[in-house]
Image 1 (cartoon, helix red, strand yellow):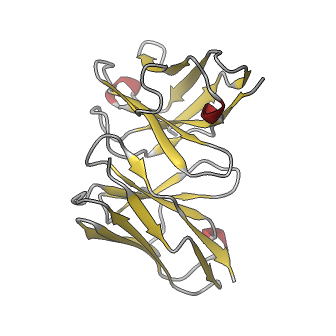
Image 2 (cartoon, chains in turn blue, cyan; image 1 turned 120 degrees about the vertical axis):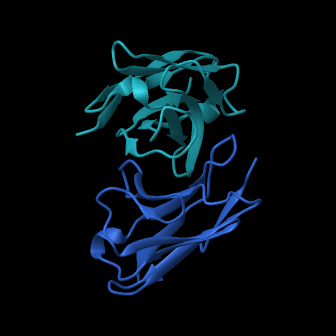
Length: 107
Length: 121
């Protein structure tokens, strides 16, 4: 099973600041990595797939990068609606696995 | 608009069973793989099961193998999850999610709102 480790667990930032979230895989996942956003009481929403492709309707301030074992989700300038929990997910191997999440909170 | 809507959750005793359903609309259901993902209270996301668009291939997490069965009825645009021998640790919100292709695996591009399953005596 591929383990995804997300860091930091919590990121305290102010609106307008840049957020950098990390996801590290226990073995290479090539570029088969997705990122999701989840707000309290809501379902997750796909942000990024294939490591760097924005899903339909996702604002340009969200970007993904990386390949192999190290990946980054960057939010260039935080909007109030971006404060949420973010998960990465790999789909190179079964079982599909998620990281433990990074909570982006208002400082 | 592509949508999926879960139903069938509830409170069940340990060892009991439920059948979760997921009604899909707004897309050609039979051409996309479907998945169940769960989230225990206060915890992260856990993939549970996947099924190909045609229904001929299924995959399950080790934690549910032998107890949960994923199926689909493409004539009804509906996904199912039969959950048997339920344990307290199965308590979670269960999400139905659509994949981007007919082959199982990959990511989840459309999510339902989720349905709660509580296992307790």
